[in-house]
Structure formats: structure tokens, C-alpha cells
Image 1 (cartoon, rainbow, N blue to C red):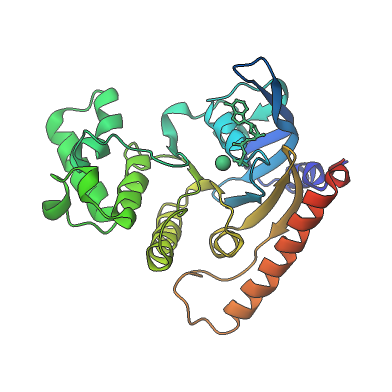
Image 2 (image 1 turned 135 degrees about the vertical axis):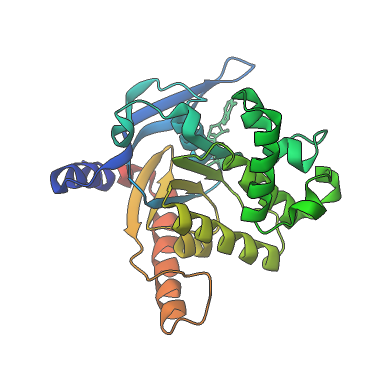
Length: 278
Ligand SMILES: Nc1ncnc2c1ncn2[C@@H]1O[C@H](COP(=O)(O)OP(=O)(O)O)[C@@H](O)[C@H]1O
Ligand SMILES: [Mg+2]
């Protein structure tokens, strides 16, 4: 039995409510040339309610597929995917997803990107505009300056802020972030990490974030899940005080560095010995 399967059962015994549970989930792709590719291969993971879980792993280990499967964008071919924290039904209208790469509409202004989901949900125009301004403010962008701009008129960090705000438009209960800081410069990455932590702490939202940046995972998550070959191979709880992105907390840097080292060793061993996951 895998460590992560044990963790699912342990939490159930402890009475901790999981927002999302996957047990032995498989998800396959078929390429245009008819080749079958395993995206998930017996993936077991529990995401406790109101916690943040970071998934780390080498490229092609299945991180994005995991996120898409939870979001309902990929079918489950075998195993069980449940949402016990939400009455076992996927909270489809309350999932905020930030996809890997671009997650916005270049031809819409910031205001109309922020209100896109609200348009779909039939919100009246005045309400949409009020919410868009609120969201802009939430992510630290002055509405009077930015609402009328187009995405091409924003910096990389501002674009990421807008995309994070888009995921919050319909007040999500489950937040799925795929490489939210990838491609940003060092300072912008720090700022976005700080923003993500602040938004998590403020809303108490259940979060699954995919990242290949191990220090980021340790900074933001309550639990780091190491993924390899389409499954979770190891879990590392991060029991450090928050906020962790502010800096200056005595001892935190050393504790974070120790956990980063531990996770990197687990990732290397998972890559080298995929069979250890069995
Ligand atoms: N649309 C697709 N069609 C076929 N194979 C895919 C598709 N998307 C992903 N894959 C394959 O599934 C595996 C997992 O991919 P992915 O979940 O994107 O990994 P990660 O996010 O960890 O880099 C990889 O081998 C990848 O090539
Ligand atoms: Mg990916």
C-alpha cells in the first residue's frame, strides 16, 4: 500500500474532512497518431479541507493531468475521484483554475477578463463592473489605472495578478493553480507568492498548486506531494508558521532549506526508482 493511500485512510480515521480524494486514479491520453499515454497511473491523494497542497515532480510526471482531472477537464478512466468536503459532488461553479501558460483573453480589457465568468453566470453589468474593480484591488492593482488596459499593456507580474484575480471572480471554494509563477523574474515571483499566500490566508480556500519550484512549494503549502510516473510517491507535511513569504522570521529560512533538501532527495529517488511507488 502506498504512503499516500495510508494518508487518505489515516485522515478518514482522524475525522479530518478532505475536500478532494483520489484513490488509484488512472487517466490516459490518446495521441493524434493513436498512441496511448498514461497521464495518471494509480494516483492516490487526499486534499484536506481548507489546506494547501503543492504537487512537485519532474516534467511529464502527470502534475497538469492531475489538476485537469480534479477540475473535470479530463475523464477518470479507473479508480475513484470524490469531493467529500463538498457532499461528494464536484463544486463545478466554485472551482477557480489558473492554467499553465496563458489563462486570459488578449482581446478583452482587464475589466472584461475579470468579469468573464460573471457574464457567463448572467450577472448584471453594474454588478460585474463593481466586482471587477474589487478583484483588481484584491490583487494590488489600482482599478482606475488598470481596468481599461488590455493584457498586452501589462507587465508579466501584473498579468499573473490579473489571472489570479480571474480565478477569484466567482468566489471559488477550490483553487487550482498550475505553475502560477513560472516564467516570472525573481522579484515578481516573490510578489506573486506573497499574494497567493495572502489570498489563501484571507479566504481559507482549499488549494492545489502545481509547481516545479520546490522552495515555492515549501513556502506556500501545508503538504507537499511528490509526483512521478503519474502517481504520488511521497508526502511531506510543512508545519511551519505563517506568513512564510514575509521573510525575517527567525529560524524559518533554515527550516525551509531543510525541507527543500528533503523533498529534492525524494524527487530524485522517485525519478530513479519509479517502482518504489508500488
Ligand atoms: N493531450 C495530450 N495527449 C497525449 N499525451 C499527453 C497530453 N497531455 C499530456 N500528455 C502526456 O501525459 C504525461 C503527463 O503530462 P502532464 O500532466 O502535462 O505532465 P506535467 O504537468 O507533470 O509536466 C506526459 O507524458 C505527456 O506527454
Ligand atoms: Mg504541467
